[in-house]
Length: 472
Image: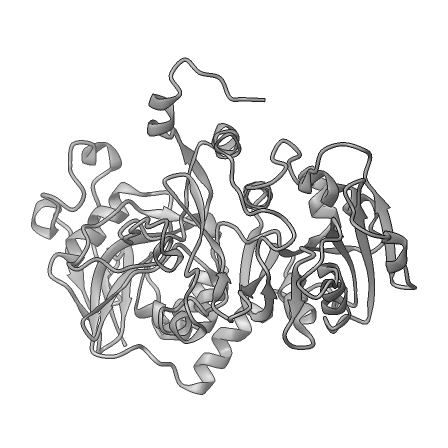
């Protein structure tokens, strides 16, 4: 372990207004000096790395620029290169870091830090205000191999996450399943498997709320049992958001799972696995890993690229998902409403699902509302189910839905989706649609990001809809 300490004042943001990112700013230009002496009274920041980690050329200048240009952040992480491969990372994700401490190969903290060990860096990050932790999308370190902590350190870092779970164990969940009663090739209603999945979730007390309307095929009353109730929708066209909201209002338990009727369980205990991280009061929603019947990935979290929500790693095998790092539990911009667990109070606090988005993007909209409250949205691959996507409803996205979604949120900048990733956008190959594909050359440094949702104007939409109104 080594610590490089910056030992003089930095230029002010005003002095940097005409300075491009990383340009014309170095120790000689600013008068900043670097020291290994922690007793130096001029120390204003500490760069913490390990003895077997090296800094790439220009990295220190870039760190100087970042600290000077962003007085609003107290800690900074960055990307690295391990074994010749770029390790492009997202904004602060305590869950991801707790299971992947290799991301702590560099941490920069304002002030003099006496404990620059791997655990010390994690403690600094976990104790900080998330809004004051910045991620610099720039490859600044090089290592021959991944940073692997010893068992004691790994256990202590993991405890920083589990120690946040202050709420009691969750033993009761209301499960809301909107359904039209459609059947599979054998004539069995899909919802039968969804009810079975709910019962295999590993939660002691459950109630299953089937939300049905005039479109229901067959006899809905036949599903009523001790743990199954019907919630009737008023007559009218199908609206997934409205159906879920009715179920949430009727729910009797403090925690609610929204579940598609075309989902089936693979293993027992999956719902209890989802419920565990929700004991952290800062977690607002938890989503599961969903796979197609052939066990390729349907949903492993969602990313926002050019204002468009996309399922990442779709079509990948589970081995490919593990190899790409997508199998790690982590905070994300959104998870699918096909299997989403949240507190009933939080759902009510944000107004439930947006009924102006009746088919698509309502789950992303919900996640954005929770993020805006300062809560986190978590994807966990440890809960895995089969999703017969589109089996009970035609998987069509209408242009007006995306238009209405962007009208509500603008172009949301996803802090967990690295700006240097390449997305081929091949509609004929779902495997490549939202993959985290690495660039061939080292990417240029990007803008500092924090785990705070913010929006910008979607310029392409603004041009294409000049003088137009959003359809009702």
